[in-house]
Length: 465
Ligand SMILES: *Cc1c(COP(=O)(O)O)cnc(C)c1O
Image (tube, rainbow, N blue to C red; front, side):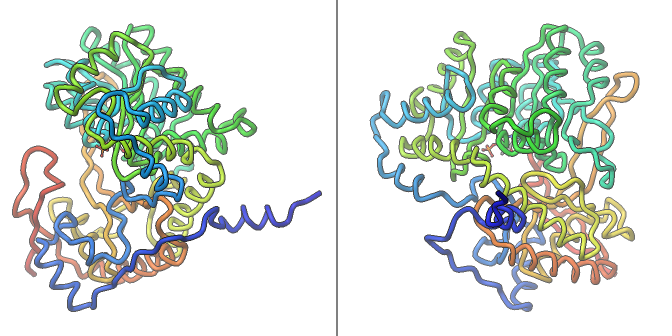
């Protein structure tokens, strides 16, 4: 019998939760927004959160925890050594990923710091579909060279390739050959956050492992959005439609030598991270570094209650109804943007919508910083914040030599379980207005830019007429 209720529930992307606690939001007046922008050096990094109505700066650690997670916090066993909370955390990570050795860290980059210190030395090459910005910075910090071996459809926003996050296997083989003996590690970033939040297919992951094996190179996952990736495999890849999400996750991870994760993404917590592996000797070395940088191996820089919240959140993040709603809400934002005439990356990804900034500001040259113009217009017109940056990738050309690709996109990252469809409609409406005023922008210049992770600290000023 047809279940009309379920059809409605799924087609409307109705929320599989209701609100128990609310947080008041404020939309500052127009003149106030002008002043705030000026005082924040025209940079998203200096605007106070209380002055932002809808905040799409990041989906990292900005999710709403569930009643079960908040209750779990209260059960936190704050023992330093082998607390109950560590056992719960370790058990959840083992169950979800099928890996035995679990090393907690205070967030994702703390895990990256340890992994890169152990695996990457000066002159090494690290290959990934796309390095996340902190990952790239950690490879470079070790004196290594991060190369993104991504396919070309990524740059073409309109190409309907369902797995734009995939490795370009030909490029990967080329790089493995060209840099033979220097490749320290292959990193599979799932889903591929900076590449339009696009997923990686199971077939591609399998091919990556095969290619890496031929060269004796280790494969690790940067697993921040592993559950969203699994959901896309289920809904977009042939042969996975009937498989449960947890099974897809374990298959994905079976092709790696381990993983690290920023739990602030798909584990829906406000802080946390970990490394997981079956390689006992590697795990021991990670634990030694952990004690040096983070804390004892059973808490790794976190309060033990935070480990409890990760344990619950990891399992909640795998819930298919939650994932359908999450991915559906992001697509809803994408459609609202398209209705406003904005060029966005398609098919829509997992954690956010990527806007083609050059298409919106065709009259501005890259050095006139159209991405800063978009951030400012967005805040001025609607009190909305998004991450607008220059993403620079090192990829490889046909002969294996390094080619730099710079692309100007704005990322509208949607926090988990936080905003409603009306918020998405609102942002779509603001973008329609941004599109009307974009031609008036004269661009911006940099007034301050440090060397390492500069976009987190940069300051700007408008260019005069
Ligand atoms: C967020 C993120 C990281 C870094 O994790 P933090 O928790 O922010 O330190 C690394 N890789 C990816 C893919 C991420 O999304």
